[in-house]
Amino acid sequence: MSGPRPVFPCPDQDDRALVEAVLAGAPGAFERLVRQYQGLCWHIVLRMVRHPEDARELCQEAFLRVHQYLHQYRHDAALKSWIGQVAYSVAKRHLERKRILFADNPEDGEGLSLAESVADDFDLESASADAQVSSHLHAAIDALPPLQRTLLTLYHLEELPIGEISRITGLAEGTIKSHLFRTRKQLRDVLEPRIGVAA
Amino acid sequence: MNVRNKDRQNEAERLDEREWQAQEQALRDERLGVAASGSDAPDAHYRAIARVLREPPAESLPADFARQVAGLAKAKAPLVRDATRFERIMLNVLGAALVLSGVAAIAMYGSQAVAGVDVRIVQWGSALAACAVLSWSFDWARRQFGGDDRLHHV
Image (cartoon, rainbow over all chains, first blue to last red; front, side):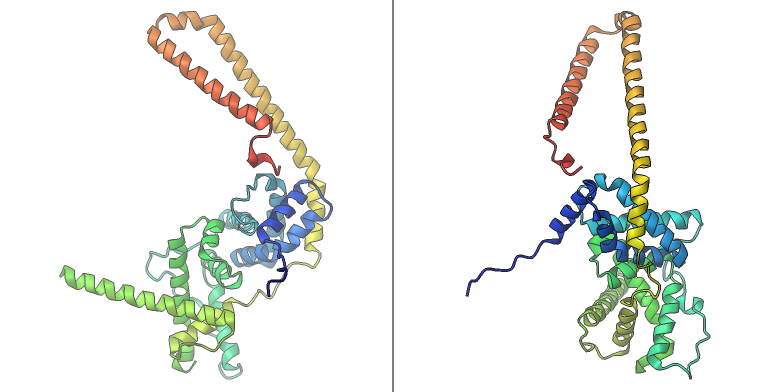
């Protein structure tokens, strides 16, 4: 019954080994690090700035920063969070430079009325119900402020726990929960008149 | 009046909590790919929202992005290293200049300055300075002889 158990490497140990390899200048180590975390970086940056061309440049900038400051990484948080934090701050600075509204305050009532800001030009006849709901939701998500869009992406697509998102964004966990709650409620309100109770 | 306000607030909190649970349940159901556990409209809405939010963006990074960035980082590394080295040298030079000017000032005007000050303040000040120097020396020695775990991976 008690045969030898397979030993799975701990992701934390993998990260530590990868960081040490990059710092030691091992060939291919940094490329491996980029490949491992480029998805996370892309999702954060693209959701924040929305323009793929800008997002590509910012992702490059984020990884060059990671390379430059990796010696300052202390392993006190997951490498994923640390890299996410770098990507988030690079994208945030880009938005600030361009004077783009970054977030709605969750305490300011319902904030932006998504139902009003989403274009009302869908062809109800030609699209199937699912595709119509999906494209309407995509339009509503695009109309959200960058912060709300990014929090939803980190929570739903990257499946990060709220504590990790807090480390990446520097926001309090309660604030993140509040943003998630209100934004999802806003998105539900967008769907309400479209699919009603029949959904 | 206050009781009615409190009741209203409690009711709102209860509804918000129920709404949050519906959102989280839809997220869990969508992750696991199970049939919706709720059957009413809000649950179906949240399920649709969770489904769309889990879709990755249509655009993606170029296939050779990692190789390109690694090449760029390698090319920039000597420049960054030189800049860091220059910064460190400048810091050391300025630090040394500060210490030397401090020593020179004490040597030239120290006795005049101390003459007007209460002797107890001078004694306690000297003791404090000695403690600070001792503490910095220990810290410096620990870093020099590898006692600081934080520096092992650098």
